[in-house]
Image (cartoon, rainbow, N blue to C red; front, side, top):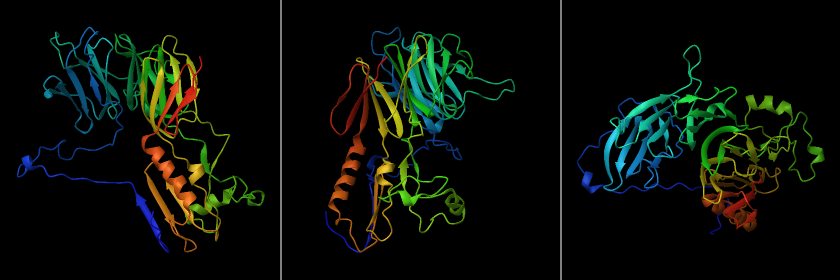
Length: 388
């Protein structure tokens, strides 16, 4: 790496590539959504779904694609790769999941707080039409089926729907399209924030909490206690009065601001339930800080796409006058270095190697869990043991 001195460098892992479309030159493109369409930036989880190609009652060459910002689902014939029809659903569809027999597809509408049921039986008169809308309303007609995202089927008659803002997974009777037991006593309680991605395999329901955290927090205690921190990287570098000062002066000059681990804060990331009894079998920690997707293989190995912001490692502020300060934001892939004492980004080779290794690991890391055994397969994959 080239050494630069007396500078503050910000390196952002952002790239943009624009290629000319010669075929579309001089032709105006149709808008993806109508003028004035309100955008909600709803989170997609499995926005594409393939109908079972064989073995199911209803099988074929059908691909369904959720168009989140236009409130529609496209039906694509995979034998020709052509769209056959476009289906209007609720607001901001983010997930499409086929029933195990392939005869229905359920679509989670994140903003309209509903699930649209599409008939995917090609022999039916209502083929590729919405035949039912699943909601849960209170006595005043207000929705309680708030912000559905992930959908998974335990069978053709039982489904799970993750309601991200409520931190619960609703159980739905797939025959009557009603919520089983309501959302107070009948739903699965997720003791973490924003369950989104869910999956069912071999009698187990797997639930990933999107904002799972890692016990890290700002080093604020009721009383500042720097005198007991010989390494100056302690748990209580600021007191409660600094919180009030923050409202007036957010930079808090002269204070050491650390990100530390609080062992009293729970770290609950990933949940496993029995689909027969709906009993919680296992809660896992240490998976990551943002969990995006879940996939399960036939051997009960579960793969979770995630980011792991190591705030407690990279959020340590160097003491004043003792060299450089380095900030690493792993989730965005940004490295920042500012010189305090005319030092350069290339002058601390050990820190550079650590940062480069974390970024490399972050780009492709999968946390992997096995139900049968524990193992470790290198820096990009962690395999944890889940016992019944």
